Amino acid sequence: MSVSDAKKESWISLFQLEVARAIAAQLVIAVQYIHSQGFVHGDLHRGNLLFLPSCEFTELSTETIYKEYGEPEFVPVNRLDGQKLPPAGVPEYGVVPIWLGEASENISLPESRILLPDFGEAFSPAQEKRLESHTPLLTRPPEARFEPTKSLTFSSDIWSLACTIWDIVAPKTLFEGIMTDEDDMTCQQIGLLGPLPTEWQEKHGESIHQSKYLNRSLEDRFKKTVQQARIEVRMPSFKSDEQDALLSMLRSMLCFQPEHRLSARQVLETEWMVKWALPEYEKIRNSQ
Image 1 (cartoon, rainbow, N blue to C red):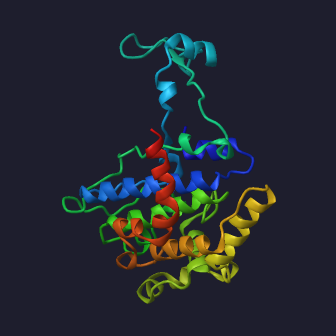
Image 2: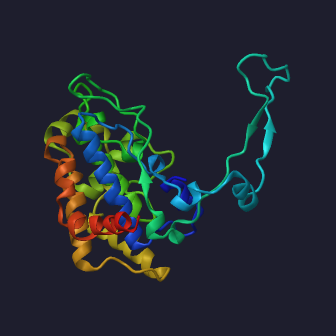
Image 3: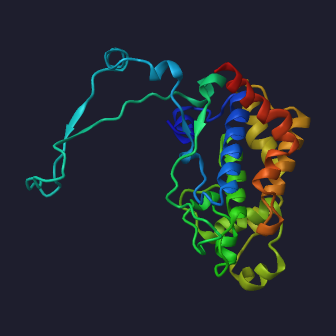
């Protein structure tokens, strides 16, 4: 089960505070390690964060799993044109995957161990120049659009990391839109974070109409979409000191120009990580 699956399974799309902190901490630790090895992940988003099965589950026998979750369901493989399947290399049937997940609000701290997989977009900036980002548009760094002749860097991951952390603590994504395009996404970014760098405005300013997204500060967005949502469903909200620390960290990661963003190591050293996120992860480690 992914973080995305857990949120979709929930009617409120929220994690308990301690769980959200622990997930964010593990994600930052993973990204920092990847960067320390000289690689950019290149595809950070909530769908690529997988919950690890509990130690108890991994010790279950096949018979116990069948008893608890049912026998495997086999589905015949058929060609859409009705013709017979080629004899070599094509299975006769598929197996419906077992659902081991649960709604986000029901996940406990011991159950919140995660794995960051999918290195299909990973690359080493020292060895490869990567000009195109295949990260989903909602978490794609803006330099992929405004600096198309410059290679993506470790800082590109930091933008996506910030968007994903927001997605972990909030019921909605930081930037919204299922069928959105680059212009709309840029307008949302401007409305939330302020004007584009001058050199970017000179290249693309005329094509971007930003009026409908003005006057939406990060603080206002947090209060309306995170704090208010938690209060409405009677879940604990972030206290003011934690909110300030979290937003300060995110703001330092969401700089338009890549060179102005924090590094993954610096993110680990921020107040929010040190005081709130990392201690929750340590509780998981100490309980194993």
